[in-house]
Image (cartoon, rainbow, N blue to C red; front, side, top):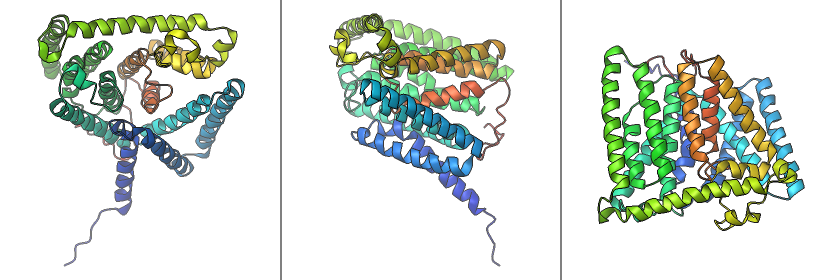
Length: 398
């Protein structure tokens, strides 16, 4: 007796396509830990552009397709105009990166299963990679600076945090059950990496995620999570005070010198921000500025340690105006269309932007798609169920 398989071939193809897209969407985070990340970024950008084009042609209505083409045309017009005025090729790279990032964010939003797989894959891979570095490279500050090729330990903290932002925003938006272990684990990790901004953002992310879990949990679970939240908060803040403000031994190096360096760097960052603002005239305000012309920033290899300064220096008012407009719209929607889910995802977006304000991590970079993706989720989220009917997302949130 021959038993015929009832498996639908289209389901297999859809699952294979979603897994492939998930690997592609997670590739900027996965490839960043490799020595070939510079070349790999160009490869995935070309692949994303090609796949997104065919996806738009076959998977969306023509009016939506025309909206994408209009958006791309506007970006090209702005980037080309700035290039003609300033003769700065970065404006063209900026608008191309934003368009690719917008395509990636749209694919993640339109295909929830891809977003779920990609976020889980990136988080698991990066935390296992961190544990490997911790045991095989070392746990001292100098060792942590060797985890990434050509990047400091602050980038390690940022990379792990970015995977958590992607994971929790996706799972909260689609109302899937998530684990608290990663966000709890991230706090001691950020302390080990000795980045002050990383520690603060990790603690704030911990508070936001656990608070949402308490509000969304059942009555008994809510009480248990509340007690866990209070207990861990006391332990974490006590541990932070003990670790950061006291010298715990030579195994971790000279913490006082590390903290002094962090403090000096923070003050220099503020000075660079003010110096950049003071240097603006009418032309540079509207069309951007040359960072190398500002002495204090030039002394730091042209790195202002502020993503917003980098973005404005490239596109000027054409970068600043959309950022301010989007911030106003998000605040307006929170005030007049309040929802618990929207509030939490907006807080995640705010924390990510706060991290971007103390280092040159976005605008433009391989991670802009995460920021745009969470921005889309904050616009579309509400206090009710997401009601997503996309393939691969069931109503069972287990």
